[in-house]
Length: 215
Image 1 (tube, rainbow, N blue to C red):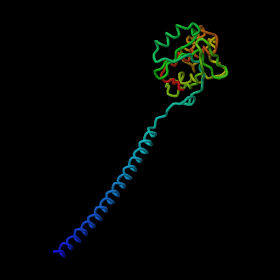
Image 2: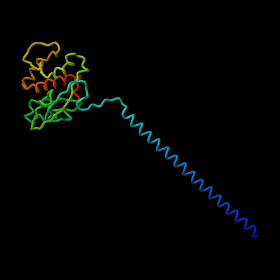
Image 3: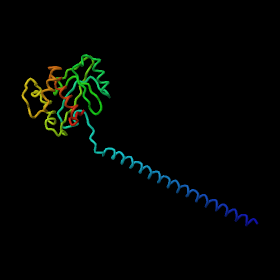
Image 4: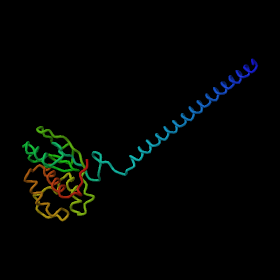
């Protein structure tokens, strides 16, 4: 009986050793699989993020930036404010007599109050009440089908303002048919060429969606 008992103890001990080894091997195998799975998951996540990032920059859209958004000439406006609707902009004008020569210019759903427009930044004149500041922009008529309208950015950008002299009543076929009448109305507001340019620009830009102002 002692011999049998001794043999059984050895078998039990052997079984315990074998079970322990198998158990440790199983744990090690499980940890190895878990680690490999985690690395694979992280790799996939990293790849997905990189793909989304690249796709986000490949929409083909051109985002306008200040000063160089179109092929049109550069202008500089003296700006008094900007509003989300015409009524608010008009109300602001009525509250400030010093803005009586200003114009409201709509660009992409926003209404800008400008007091003058020049082609040379050094010629900008700022108001103190209300305070105005510089707003650089380009004006393009590239999408205009009518040649006289498409040419307006170049006419307005002429540093000599040759065609903004409305004292000359002679007709010019390269200009819009109502050029003289619009010019006369603008000149009645002010004789300052920067204000005349603003008024003419505001009129034709409001009537012709193809004349694009970009900041």
